[in-house]
Length: 479
Image (cartoon, rainbow, N blue to C red):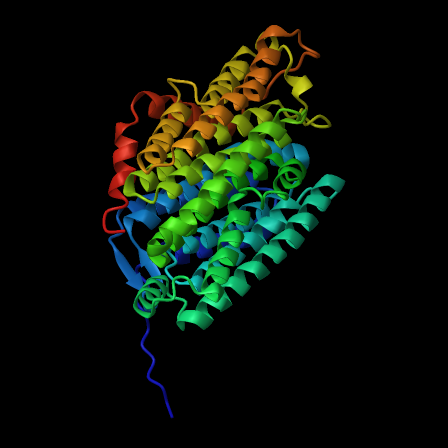
């Protein structure tokens, strides 16, 4: 018996299709023009700018039987992912040359990983979420191990692959339980069936929910599923660490939010408590363990764990104000974290990656501009006004407090105060100690542009946050 086949509309998924084509073109260009490294970065930059413009012109739609949805919510997170790709591309040229990393596979793998992230942001079905997640993860596994002569990079890639494989297995097992209980993998269908059948307290359903939640927590680097983060951040190429700290985290939070609010809105009383515990663990582990770190990439890795905890406060609230606060915070976090890693790349040279905190002693005397920019980014990560980091934390805490999580907010404020020690310790090294050595920072055009964008984002959103907050709020209309 012949089954009729109707081609689904491809308009909603056109940005992803175009980005796949760009990734393939980058591979071909690298084969044809292996010495023209700048062409690869220029093509990637043009693709990012063009796709961001295309996304802003997209209208709400769906395809593949409502498994893939384009709405303002998904567009917001896709823009964050593309901005992460754009800024990583800007800061990568000089670093790739220093580390002798092949440019073609680097840019194409990053492009394919962003395709996976964009699919995750638009996925309304657990199977599509998994497909996007694996496309993202497999590309990032390869990118982490691109320093092929570096033992730490090889170790990080293997660890990330093994831990990522386990987390994917847990996620799939959770999906299978949810499908077995509801007969569907569609998030809206799961919510409808659970409500009609009255199985919200069924142990098998709750087990499946917990397993899927664990898989998502691994992807965003939240405790107690954070153990991969420090080693992978330290061992990966620095430009890739910057990329991983922003774009995959944003994609993870995109599916996290859609899963909770579309699939299990009636379980908020149960999952709110779970998210509160995970947020507190993330903030506690991230901020306290970071106090003892002497490597700046490991310090920023634990910082990333803590910031995942802060971002979870918005999901914890379970309100539109909370979700818009989380979205705004992830947007802000992208600029301040990218800026911090850009300074690390700026100071990197052949044979000396300057990853130790000791390397930053006296930086204000040898490179006052680099020290000033790092000070701005550290202040923002701490949450000191008038930087954007203060605005982001303020609205997250406000949303959680309004939802009744008073003790969680108090603990978050305490942990934020603890974080000031290790962020401002770096500032003290830069401004109050004598330099260990004299060196000249190389400001390439791309790195300069990345630093300028980061600084404008951190200062601009700190002084004039209204438009960005309104944009996040509008993205939730109809969600």
